[in-house]
Length: 87
Image (cartoon, helix red, strand yellow):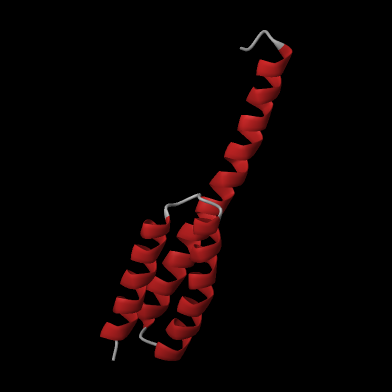
């Protein structure tokens, strides 16, 4: 454990930030899963709506640098391709 007051504060801040980032990553994974689930059911209109909502989530998390912008782009591209394969 940290002995200096500033180190203790940094440890507290790191724990708080880690919890926040973890919740955002969880939100990202949930958004991706929801699109994949909608694609699996075969309902194209629901899947399209879900994709649109999840793209917003993916972009916002990439803007916060929780994931890299190229990773966000890859996720969106693969989800869109899965939706396109439904047709």
